[in-house]
Length: 100
Image (cartoon, rainbow, N blue to C red; front, side, top):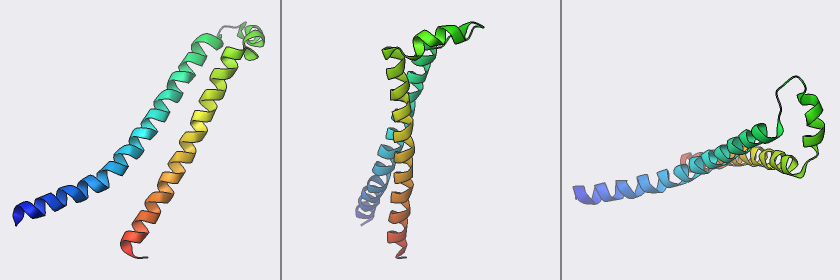
């Protein structure tokens, strides 16, 4: 009887933990890729010297830098959307458990 209880508890924990791990794993992955793209953009497209504003004229409209900038922008937008949907889902799940 104790083993059956342990198995049931293990299934419940697995059922609860798996969605949270997937959610936070996806958040971490989005954040990591956005961070990588920002660092690539800073390395290849930004000149932090005094005359960097002149070089910016050439790199600002370049397809490589423009693409990197757009990708990091979209990743940050997806991150915020995903985070918001996660909190809405958590709220719905909690209210269904509590019967509110």
